[in-house]
Amino acid sequence: MQLYDKDLLSVQEVRELVEKAKTAQQELSEKSQKEVDAIVKSMASAGVRNARRLAKMAHDETGFGIEADKVIKNVFASNGVYEHIKDMKTIGELGRDEEKKVRHIAVPVGVVAGLVPSTNPTSTVLYKALIAVKAGDAIVFSPHPNARNCILEAVKVIRQSIAEAGGNEDLVGCITLPTMQATDHLMHHPDISLILATGGSAMVRAAYSSGTPAIGVGPGNGPAYIEKTADLPLAVKRIMESKTFDNGTICASEQSVICNDDMAQAVQAEMERQGACFLSEEQRKKLGSFILRANGTMNPAIVGKSAQTIADLAGIDIPAGTKVLIAKEDGIGRGHPYSNEKLAPILAFYTAGSYKEVCDLCCEILHYEGAGHTFSMHTKDQNMVDYFAKRIPASRIVVNTSSTLGGIGASTNLAPALTLGCGAIGGSSTSDNVGPLNLLNIKNVAEGIKELDEIKADLPDCSEGVCKPQHFGDINMDVIVSEIIKRLQNA
Image (tube, rainbow, N blue to C red):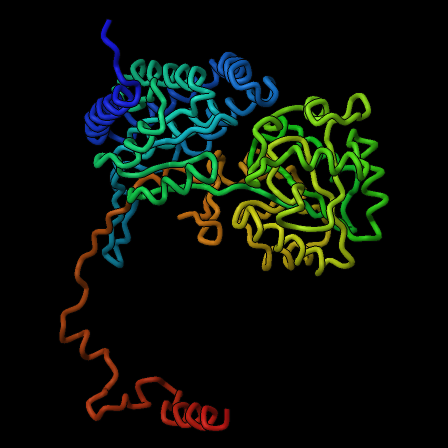
């Protein structure tokens, strides 16, 4: 019997998938907006029809999260995203300004590489496929090995829906032999125009260092501030629902709760009333040594697990029915494991003397991990919102809502998305909730409106080496320059 090398087979598969995707994308580029939209609608409908089945497969295969919540995520990634993008102009001419004689034409990037995490496998596939095809692109997925089967099934559903709408099913493909070599080859393939990376920090860094343009997202580590004017029971309800949604597997979920010192007792009492368990010092240390690995990264054993399961794994006793585990934390960084991102129903609890100190604390948390991602606050004071919005290093400031659902655009009017850009501060190429317009280029067509003589006539008169003051209206440049020189000499 002849044996074949799995890595070589996976690399060859990537080559074939990309070649087929390129051909399918070229066919798609000849279609009208109406024809593309018909394909996208068929894809979204198929995602909704299969939402429950795909959710069960994802839960059974990965062991992460809650099956019922994964159904919601699949519907959101299909219908929620579709409703937002269905009327979006993405094919051909996007607009023109007759007065300025400028036109804007959409140009698909081509073939996109889509990296898929195990935490949100089927919903990420449904979402990324929709926005890619809407933008006129094809996409080839690299699945997380621990979620291979459910991801392949989601791709199968999408391919069939494309064919039913008269499109080429090769617009969406997926590696069936996931290996590191296959993913690396996909990201470096010359016919891949863009990488859409959702996954661990190492994978996102690899995408950005591949030499191929990439949209990647960093970790979330969002603090949630309960300000003194907040409706406390409602704020806690939103935080508890958010942190337990699919057992905290969405990166926009709250990772810490912060309040003023004089509110600490009331906040703790309300959170305990709604199902939180504040750990004793001994329990805090025991769980803290379990949630991170020796290298400082999150222990995968806690990801997407219930509070009770995590407590059992860590060997601590908690009250029956506990929904969220909360540890009082007094520091940030190494040696303070609760200050990290925890994709599980675990929260850090901080207090500070004033709202300014709270803001500084939240900034420090985000700069340690999660810069550019998401911050949430609960308040009735718009001045507080303004104060934090100006200072917090996050791309999404969500107010009086679940951070999880608000960040992805389910409970807010942010663009519905499962890839949340962190901006330059977070090492990302965009701060957007990523959508179709992030996956296309815009060609600008501009007609000439001036001749060289007219351009020259509009310039200041600098013939004597100094631009004449009269060209700057009432501003006397000589006076300004003299004042600058005087101040420099006195400095």
